[in-house]
Length: 64
Image (cartoon, rainbow, N blue to C red; front, top):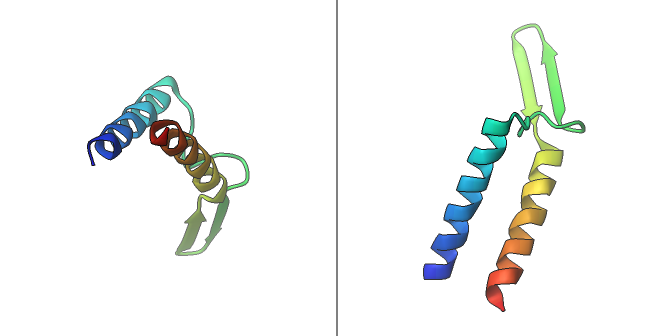
């Protein structure tokens, strides 16, 4: 449980650093955005894939 909390803290800190450096998390190329009239839909598919890869690497690093 302790390692899990450390990983979550590191992920949140890394996201904060990336956002402060100007990396457009949630607006990467490949994210789906649809607007028409009063309806807007945004699905960050590429952002989800990037976050998934990073979390997989972090969890596999701390598992060993």
